[in-house]
Length: 363
Ligand SMILES: *[C@@H]1O[C@H](CO)[C@@H](O)[C@H](O)[C@H]1NC(C)=O
Ligand SMILES: *[C@@H]1O[C@H](CO)[C@@H](O)[C@H](O)[C@H]1NC(C)=O
Ligand SMILES: *[C@@H]1O[C@H](CO)[C@@H](O)[C@H](O)[C@H]1NC(C)=O
Ligand SMILES: *[C@@H]1O[C@H](CO)[C@@H](O)[C@H](O)[C@H]1NC(C)=O
Ligand SMILES: *[C@@H]1O[C@H](CO)[C@@H](O)[C@H](O)[C@H]1NC(C)=O
Ligand SMILES: *[C@@H]1O[C@H](CO)[C@@H](O)[C@H](O)[C@H]1NC(C)=O
Ligand SMILES: *[C@@H]1O[C@H](CO)[C@@H](O)[C@H](O)[C@H]1NC(C)=O
Ligand SMILES: *[C@@H]1O[C@H](CO)[C@@H](O)[C@H](O)[C@H]1NC(C)=O
Image 1 (cartoon, rainbow, N blue to C red):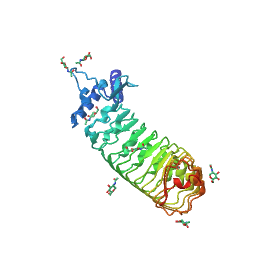
Image 2 (image 1 turned 45 degrees about the horizontal axis):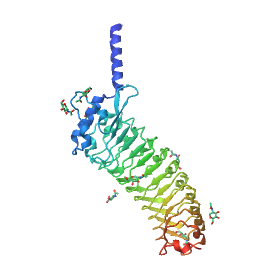
Image 3 (image 1 turned 30 degrees about the horizontal axis):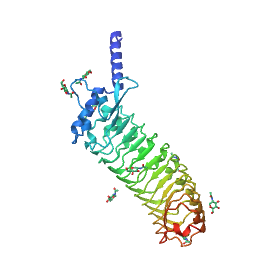
Image 4 (image 1 turned 45 degrees about the vertical axis):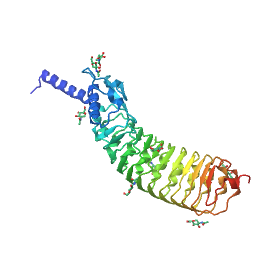
């Protein structure tokens, strides 16, 4: 049997139509519809959202609405919504009720400082173009879905000060473009996944004030672009990996308020750009490594509330930029090297019962 040319043509056309439909982006009207549907679920009605309406015309113009950004779509050349920015409007409602499937063209979602509840909706995985997901300071609950890994263009993931719980999915390590990751002040538990070592563009990582347990993975030493690393206020245990000393770009390292043990690795003497080093309230023991005296850019050093012993190394005389130095509640000897007299910028120093800038000046 031979297929008639007409039949062939019809099926080809159908095939093409199906293909085009699959590639089609949602129309601006559908996108406006998704936003209006969400607005209708909100329990608060800030004045700014009055512009979100169908108006008198049948065709809605969402691109002029408050907080909405549009752009010509690269492929379809039709106008599409690329940004939502509704920071600090005290919006009360469910994030879940926002249909992200209709908004797949978004590159930026800024909903920080509101009162949004619910979980991060599963439909968020539609946002293949998303670069900024900023949901800081809301009441968003639930675990982080491993499916977040499909947001392959993500650069900023800011979910701090919410009510997220459960483990940090190791799939976050697939977000290769990630530059800033802040999950602080949630209720996340379980270990820090070693896969985060793949995030080689990361410059800021903040997991502080959660319930994380287990060791600090050595793989974090691979994150050589990090300038800020905050892991304070968790239940992290075990030894400090010497690999953390490889962070030559690190400016601010805070590992305080955990239950870390062992000595401070002498590799930390390579953190040559560090300004703030906070290791207080852990269980670090042994001597303070003399290599810490090589951190000539150090301005604030917090070693208090550990089990450090020995005496302050004479190399500390090199820390001439030091303004704050806390060492109390350790087992450090009362012997003070005369080189400490070089620390002319010290403003605040607590060392055992002696508060010492005055002691050294003039030495
Ligand atoms: C709709 O049109 C009426 C009359 O033209 C006008 O008074 C009213 O302000 C319009 N409303 C909106 C939301 O544009
Ligand atoms: C309705 O749409 C037309 C053309 O798009 C526009 O000129 C007019 O200002 C709109 N009217 C209202 C009330 O929005
Ligand atoms: C969300 O939007 C998509 C695309 O416009 C649509 O197919 C789907 O039915 C919507 N879902 C809900 C729950 O409204
Ligand atoms: C992460 O978020 C918290 C809470 O909003 C903030 O205090 C902190 O400075 C942020 N971390 C960084 C590294 O900016
Ligand atoms: C950590 O877990 C404990 C016990 O489950 C809980 O009481 C505490 O509030 C949690 N802290 C955070 C920051 O989630
Ligand atoms: C990171 O570092 C670890 C140990 O230092 C190493 O085994 C691993 O191959 C490195 N690469 C990644 C992507 O984690
Ligand atoms: C310091 O502590 C370490 C291990 O905790 C111990 O081996 C060492 O002898 C102590 N040094 C001094 C000077 O007390
Ligand atoms: C640091 O101090 C030690 C001992 O005081 C000294 O020998 C060394 O040259 C100093 N290094 C730097 C980089 O200043």
